Length: 162
Image 1 (cartoon, one colour):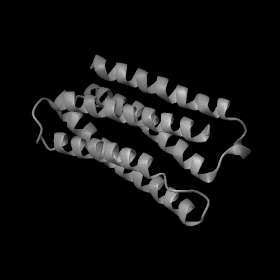
Image 2: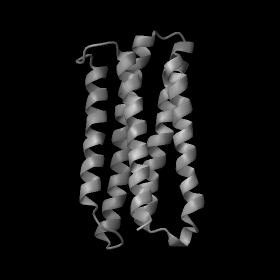
Image 3: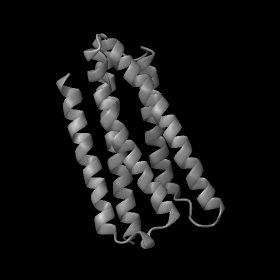
Image 4: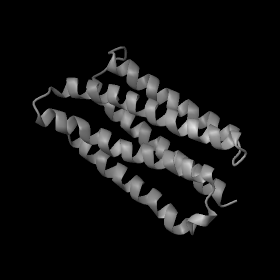
């Protein structure tokens, strides 16, 4: 269970660091609609990783077995990422269609690939199709979600400073 506490703490650090972008980025008038969506991805993945890290701790406290709690967490991660990813991607494509943004093909390919790897991995681990204990896969999925948030943050900072 300590690993999930640690993951939650690291997720809080990533969320805090991404919030510093607002301070260093300047006033909100400099932000485009697409910048807000990109920042939405950063916050969604980092804040999601906080709550998803804490989920098995809460479930175990209510008497659930750690293996079952990890499986619930894996399915919750899959659901969370699909819903949030769909909403934010739809919003971003509407902005692009309206002419207020542009498609970032290389960035989107890497981001989409990592998204698919996390979702597919979480789903396969939740179904028991991957070797090893579900709690290990759940921790790996949370780490990948934090990597995704950090990568989105790096791309955002580089793109907006050009």
